[in-house]
Length: 109
Image (tube, rainbow, N blue to C red; front, side, top):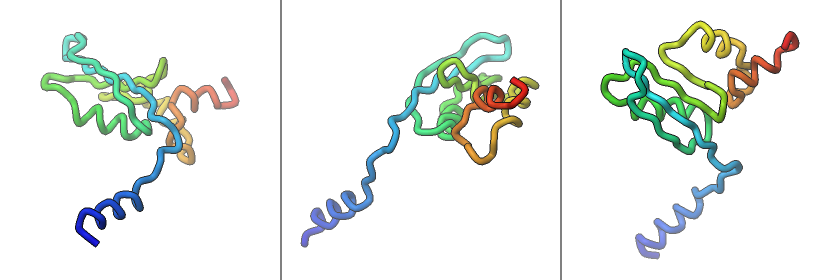
């Protein structure tokens, strides 16, 4: 077997198909005056990976980061009181659930 054959075998053995297609997240960066510095949409497989990407691509001068999944704000830094409340309501057993969905799932709503 050649080195190329071994590499192909290794790549085929570790390649796994995605179970769900990536979801598009909108990431917004705001400066200290409240103006939008940058915004982009990125496909990510989870909320956590979208948040990590948002921090990794943060432009200079950013004072606030927002990550949106459709119409739901899933992450915000610095965190406002509303975002902190919604994050606290997120069930720990389902890390993929958005804060808004967790809030709506509460029996009082």
